[in-house]
Image (cartoon, rainbow, N blue to C red; front, top):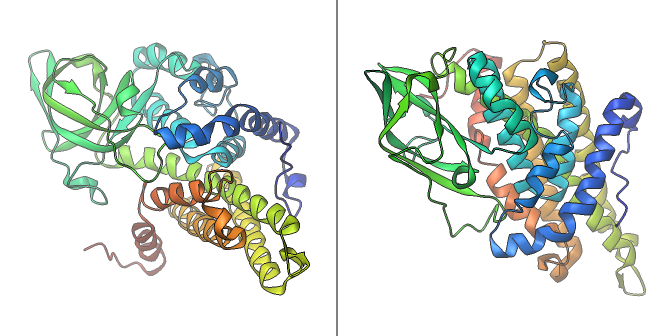
Length: 389
């Protein structure tokens, strides 16, 4: 196993508790031992390493902030962020799986579900015995989820769902989908189980990004679900947006993991690559690139840590999550591109993680709220003017 010591120029290590360090180191070792040796093969073949799901469950990576009574680790939000950071050092697809399972499936079941729903699903999802997905985005409604056309109608003791969702992580392999549909004009959440008549989840192919992630459509054609499968506490568009806040928080941390991976690769390469009789790390332009990369990683780490502390205190704002997601993904992508220039032609080879991270981050830049949408969310907060329409 190749040792990874992290990137920590401002000694943020000193700001972490013993438990937070232990969690981070556990995930760091897992990624080095289980993810990095196999992820390039899965990326090339366009497959997700499903054998990792149960291992992530056993180690407590799934729904880790939820109560222990449901089989979860009951960690704080900083520890959760560190899990996402380290998983994305391996690959965005692995972090996306855990992020969706935790923030977009287990969180809404815990927050909006009945006790029966929680007792049935949360322990199974926490162990990795079941997989979930989150159906909000539609073919014609991405940044404007309020325009969704998926509908639920009441029919006796059942609900009938018609519509379609798109760009759904885990969809094809999911045992349960948290689906958002309009019922009598109000957005409500429903649990749609795999195998339900009228429900299909074909996998989307042809991606040049997130190739090791399962991305799917969800199609509902007169899909009957029992009355007890509605999330009783869900009410309006605010409910799915609360879920997205959880996912965006994890992405902000994950982006730092990706940036650490590409920076570390570029730094090691620059020290060993000899041109004009000396390592390219000795040239001023290369040093300027590395300093820029390290500075942006450090700023992102400090942003995440303060956001996590605010979240644990119940004092964070969703606009602060938008800022962290927007900033950290933007600079992680820029860092990956700069790393590629340091590696030169070798930067496009699968032997190095740079091009894979760069391609993945193009998707991360867009999903869970595009860069532009987060700009407008923050802009509205600081000016008081709504610029969406």
